[in-house]
Length: 85
Image (cartoon, rainbow, N blue to C red):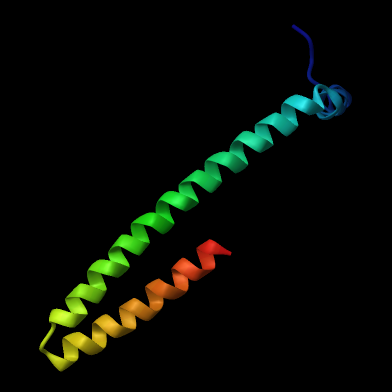
């Protein structure tokens, strides 16, 4: 069995970094695409939640409930705006 030495690890690390940069770029591209897709799903879900909250706000008669919903709506709008950047 071959010993794993620091030199071996250095050479191995260098070979990983220099081998097939296109595959590495391809992996990064796929990962970015997945992240973008998940971000879009999250924004869509949050926009649906926002619309439901606005409907609840219109139907609310309790002033405390209205105030709470208004605060939650502002927070959700800020989250959506941040995700859309």
